[in-house]
Amino acid sequence: MRFLRRDHSHVLSQMARYGFVSILALVVDVSALIAGVEWFGLPPVLAATMSFGLGIGVNFACTRMWVFAQRRHTRRRVEFGLFVLVGVIGLALNAAIMAGLHEGLGVHYLLSKAGSTAIVFFWNFLARRQFIYTGDH
Image (cartoon, rainbow, N blue to C red):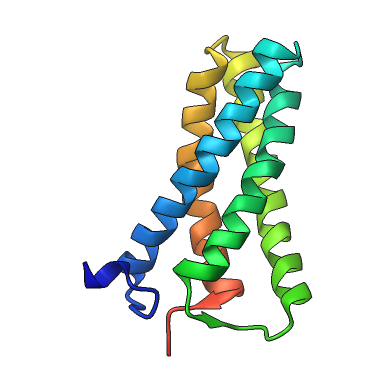
C-alpha cells in the first residue's frame, strides 16, 4: 500500500489518492444534492451548484493533507484561490452537463450527476496537479 502514502509522487498514485478524496467529497456533494432536491424542493441544477461548494471544501482540506506532497505556491491563500478557480471551472462544467442531461435530455438528475462527476473528476485532478501541486520532489 506504499502508493497510498502522501510522499509517493507517481501520477497514478496521486490519482488513486485523489480518487479516494473525491469519493469522500462526492458523498458530501450528493448527500447535499439529494437533501436540496428532496427535502428543500430546490431545482436540481441549483441544488447541484450549492452541494458542489460543500464538496469543494472537503476536497481542498483532504487534497492538501494527503494527495500532493509538493505545492507550487507557498502562500495558502494563493493555493486556495487557485484550487477554487479550478473548482469553479469544474462547477461550470458540472452545471452545464447537469443542465444538458437533466433539463435538455430528461435524464434523471442522479444519472446526470454521475456523468458530470466522471468528467469533472479528470478536469479537477489534471488541472490541480498541473497548476497548483506538483508530482516532483
